[in-house]
Image (cartoon, rainbow, N blue to C red; front, top):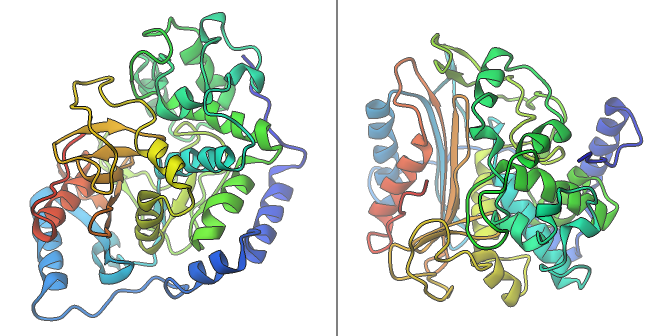
Amino acid sequence: MRITRLKSRSYLAAAAAFVALFALGAPAGPADAAAGSARYPRLCVGSQVPDSGPARDIVRIAEQAKAEMGLKSVILRVTSGGREVVTTALGESMTAVPATPAMHFRNGNIAISYMGTALLRLVDQGRVNLDDPVSHWLPGLPPAMAPVTLRMLAASTTGLIDYVKDPGFIPAVGANPFRQWTADELVSIATTKDLLYAPGTNWNYSHANFVLLGAALEKITGTRLDHLLQQQIMGPLGLRQTANSFTPEIPEPVLHAFTADRGTYEETTFWNPSWTTAPGAVQTTDICDLARSAEAIGAGELLSPAAYQQLLNPGTVGLGTPTEKCPATLCIAQTQNTHYGMGVLVLGDWVSQHPLFFGYSATQNYLPCARLAIAVSTTQNPGAQGGHTAHLIAQRIAAALAPGHPIPNFG
């Protein structure tokens, strides 16, 4: 299948147009724009940490975790009821360069939660139905995918394999981490393989679903994905430090990343992230935006109540791994229920996402019943334990601040 992208200009011209759009702001309503711009100063800065109290406890947790996990940096922000509890940065970006809260890092699958919310906004606007067939916008899918709907793409229930788990994919990325992957290349790896199950009958995480979802959103709206997400998500929410790039560039100031995944500890900051999700949704952010994102996506601020329920459970409870079915109320579950929503993880009572990309680890988590948001970003020193270290720190913070609502593991 060939995915046609909405491109009529060179990348340089497209970048210039995006800068202009970003500077002018998205066409949000006056109330949305005022609320977003008042959330925090343009430059994300650390807060004063008192000698005792929750803020000091959070910093101690982060300091201990940094030492235990061998981390180069830990940047975090915690809010309660939309108000800052603490914002801080520990460690270094590079040798002798202190990490700061203003530094930008890759946000990976956080953008998938934006695509899920953007789709649900289109449903609220009456422009699409979640059960519309994807082939209406993306003809040429294999016949086995004829039953696939928009809901199945966003909820990852299509049955497509995850191209990242294809035996040759990670070795290919490791052999040339600067390679620019196209959407067609990525999707073809998945669509040329048999489906794992009949669409809609089970669940598995597949990056291919979200590459296809991005292409479908473009076709539905006639708007390039990076512009669509700015208009529908980042603009209304005041996420002024969150943006797509069609290149590996990261805006200054940069949080640098390092990993030993190829056997030698090396810098990975500018390895090409084009394979991670749909073109137009390959983003960078800062910790203030990440915390704001946790609040807004986790609370369904941009959605109707009905759409918010779909965000939390589009029919995925009980699929993929055994879970106990329960209603998606304000505190989503009273059990250790975990499942996938519309581009979000529902981990017990928390709405989460935790991206991981070659030395970068980040996490956003929101507890709706307490209006508590936890955002963490980490990078690694030589010999670090690796994995979702940011999420592990968020789990420790949650245990201290909301002991009755632990954040479970997922995946």
